[in-house]
Length: 428
Length: 123
Image 1 (cartoon, rainbow over the protein chains, first blue to last red):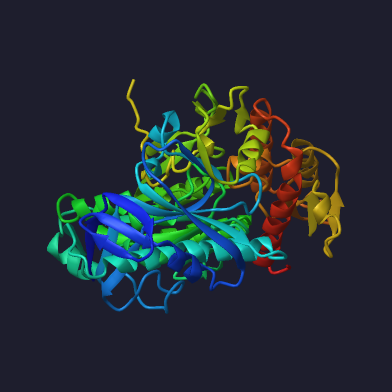
Image 2 (image 1 turned 90 degrees about the vertical axis):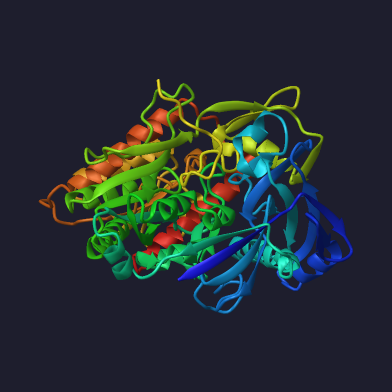
């Protein structure tokens, strides 16, 4: 399977009257975009704003982040099974607008979603403070259930990313990145002496605001599945959750999964990359055992020597993480876990809610309890009340000068468990 | 099978419900006692994110046994003990959830329970 990602670097975005991309400048037909989104009759209104790096802007609550892109040639279109008919992603060429993102906002519930600052100390913590953001504020029609509202917002973000991405169809990419890998049988023959590695990506899949979709299918209704890495990089996996701002894997992060890219880079050099197993995180104990057992079985069937496991979320998914680890290690497969920590504000508490003696190699992506103070911003996009609601729980508090004191937990993408984030580790 | 909950929105479920107007930690202790009496956890008592730990509401599904001599399910006991320890640990940092979001917390807990029941084939 061969995928070309044509990267088009955007230096500025403006809201205008027609869709044009010229010498780094992306102009969006704002009314055309709004009209396009409002063809979804579940939405009452949609507003488009821009938020650029360095602006005194706070976006809250953030639901999803999506990278604008268009399929130039290939079997599938953008986000197959969701915004286009089902076809296998990961083949042909996609043109992608880099340095920019579509962000969806609008309160589905009052307490879950996160904050994104475009300047100040908070901006250092999110990779999406460094992108030029096209922010959609979406209001549902009255009477819509929370499930319907979530689905409409999820769909709007993807539709907007495809609509804007269309401007890049005829553009000449600044750079073309090629991802090509044949069948596992063929690749193993090429590099017989190298260890074989599987990436096991755990996806949050527990219900309202806690879901992920694979080719449009609700992943909590799936069993662990083997995907070609290109499929993930080309839109097969879609975020449908806004549970934890710090460590939810946005659609943008799925499309740019750094674990997949690193394994690709090292394929044929010091390892053989056998592909991505996507697995779910169930609420039921039997469901956890079923998915972890089957994920392990797939890794065994593939002949993996090692598995890298990334988690999504915190709490009961820690049990899936440790169960995956135990079963894989018991099967003789060396396992590395990637997770963030909830180690208390001083970083001294137990980081995870579960543990196993088999977990010998764990990479941390940061402490979600780390406390930061975010000064007031001049402009709020989204729902200003959400700040008070964010401050209502222990995730944050509103200080007299309007600053928000909160844990990293509240900042979008601050402790990504697939490593698409800004925090780094320091060895003492 | 019984649903143990402190969420008033779940009180009137068509399935057997044991409702306690108590904190999550107290609810989990009641569940632990039931496990010692032969109950077995069907759903995880922990939520899936730090933010959901703010929720004052939790609903957990327990398989109940009428056999007095039913053996203790060690996995259930370990799971509930871990959850109790964790709720105790975070309690020190916790401030009461804002009134404005209580209804949302109830709704999301109810929806997550519905997903659980569906997965168990009883929803």
